[in-house]
Length: 444
Ligand code: FES
Image 1 (cartoon, rainbow, N blue to C red):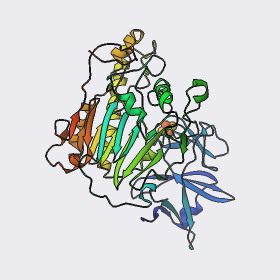
Image 2: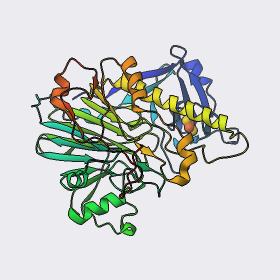
Image 3: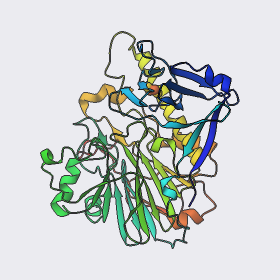
Image 4: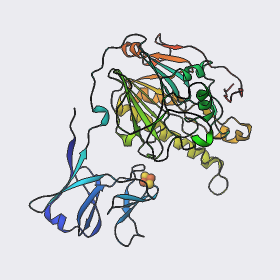
């Protein structure tokens, strides 16, 4: 097992330590330019990185704080009480990771970063050779994937019927005709978070009528995924709230681990599945999955790609919200998302990458304006960037019903862009139309 590591990130000599004032001090490491915050009180010292837990913003002194305990993020104004290392705005939210403070004999100081071992490295497994047909990944629609591992079937985020977010989102693709049979045949289901394009009560109602006891795994988030279950009247009897960062053994070959999102730990999660030492990482919608610490070189990674989920700023008018401002804003947000996803793939170097969980459309006639203006990334946009930045990673952009045979895909040295090759088959192509009876929508 890989051991915990430690690293000295900042050293101060005795004179510099003497010059620290009571309360908050900002310090920069002259060698690498990285910034730190040291809090001095009669009780000793506390220290942390000058990096906001939200989206990595930099803190400055909070001028409203007369006790010199609080700092304010320059990006979105979150506030952190350095004396307790708790974020006070938003209240009761996060705890800042502390650095160890070591006082040296001659009066100097070192700040030490301890890196615990990554939980997926506990009880490591050497990848065993896979047989053709042993691991089959089938894309159903939006964020719904069916993963067949030997005899076990694992299904992610089933949104297969009805719209999501009241009538705001509709499935862009018609799922395969047998999708409900597939759902009801699953051995286990993972639901990443409570948004209704992932936790779909109309879909779960259909499931509960046939398999109320199918195990459904969710992360142990502070906002429970199934908080609305009772009111929904959907009868599911085997919901397993699962601790973060701990392997869950399904059988001797299959295990999985749920991880929290770094930006929305109270509600969002992602998952690593390990079958015979082959890992699949699904970061779903996480803004910063597991705070950015993720396994490298997994066999398959999948994530969202589209952006435009909030619909902001399309429903704002007046002031700065002109059509051109909104168009520019949307363009920049899309670009930022593309760059972030592609950079993440570049750093993690999965062998295969699959963009998914972005196939929705604001199809209701009353949302015509939003549909027209809230333009999203296409999976092809993202794949093109990934092909440039991470040329060793293959990309797979499936249509509903498309199946990837992991054994064949990993063996094939010939094609970087998958979907045209023998191991990725499409069992059923999409159909065209407008609204379908069960709430699916297909762009004509
Ligand atoms: S990055 Fe700090 S508040 Fe958003």
